[in-house]
Amino acid sequence: MLKLNRDILFLIFEEIKDDKKDLYSFLTVNKTWCEIIIPILWKDPWKYSKWEKDRILFNVIISHLSEESKNDLKIQGIDFTSISSYQKPLFNYISFCRSLNLNAIDRIINTIIYNFSKSNITIIKNEIYNLFFNENTRFTHLYISQQFDYQIQNIPGSKRCISEIKFLSCNTSIKDHVLDGLTRMCKSIKELELFIDLENNNYGIVKLIESQKKLLNIHFLTNYSKSDETFCKILENSLIKHSNTLQYFKIAKQPTTNILSFFMNLKILELDDDCGNFKNTLWLENLSLPYLQILRASRVPIKALSTIIENTSGYLIEIKIDFISHDEISNKKLIQVIHQNCPKLEYLKLVFRSCNIPELENLLINCQNLIELSFIISDLYTFNWDNLFKILTKSSPNRLFMFEFDFYEAPKLKTLKSFFDNWKGRNPMLLKLSRINNELSDLIEKYKSKGIVKQQYSNDSNDSLDKNDTSILNYNLPIENYDFTDSIFFV
Image (spheres, rainbow, N blue to C red):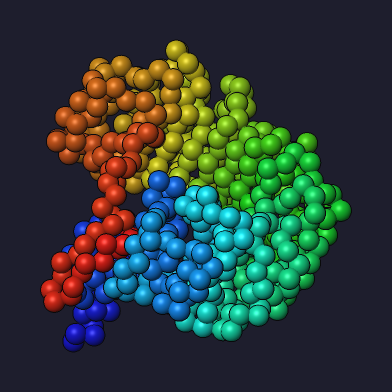
């Protein structure tokens, strides 16, 4: 029965694994809860790390160094006593890691020991790398920094350590010997994130892609408006082998080939033209993705997006379109295309103009599965909030309760009050506003007490965690008979 209890607790905590504040509060309940939660929190400690708290994580990492390693470092003139605690950790935190982010490690080292000599920094990095690359760790996610220059394949136990990674993120200018080791040891990558460099791209990445058993997700990212077209062409063509299995594709530049036309089973498409790389949109307008379920687009012309939606087969459940202007005609056309082709739609983010609020009513009627609507208000001073709220209270499907409003000028308090009053009897709404003042906040709090609004939050706030609360990173835990004096405890 005890084992069953632990298993049930594990399943519960796994369900709330992204809510670190709650998980942290549960750590102090008892020894069993702590032993279950610590490994969950340490699967991916890098997502909690921010530059102002790097020193705490650095202390945790080097506390795992053996006495032999510490003595060797001292002999070479490297002593951490002035900047770090050597207290032995209560848990072997590193053994719980399933995500290894070498970008984060490099940043932390460069932040904490920036005044060390270059040779000493290299020595320290090697010691820290050895803490993670060993036969006692097994990673599922690996992020490799552009500067990483380490002979992974020569480390005892490294094959067991990384052979089962499911996610790999790296730069296309990755070092030859690093790429060679990855290609030989990693055959089960399902998600690949590539930062395409301007030059010095490593063509060996093609072998890595082709050697995978079943690629599901591809991210092609770049910060450049230009690219090595020869390399991109070869890279894109290497995906043809995986075209039947690919389900997710993210791209920030126009493809060199028509590779997207091969992805007939694609379920998620993300397009972000941050650098103005989409020279034309014909490659999108002729695209047919019948099984597409999620479409996210930034800075992509409306005409192309309308065509993509028209060429799906009614499976879309999420559409998020941002950072692109809509004139009245294209805005109306897009809303029509959505409610005519997306009966299963649950989440929608879109520009709405006052003149097209009547078309919104058709969308609410035809898309009965809607859960969340995110409005980007483009009319600066003339938006008809009264009409919008009237339509929402009159025609919103029963499941719809999440609203986000991104606006320049907030609705009047009287108008918002009427909206809340008319919402009474429905599911309490979750409300996100791009701007909030004291009067607006007071009004929302009043309707929270009435159970009409469940939560209000703004883009500037951190809903679940006080930004100044560092206790989550460093805490002494008094739990039963454990001597929790671990001052470098990090979650």
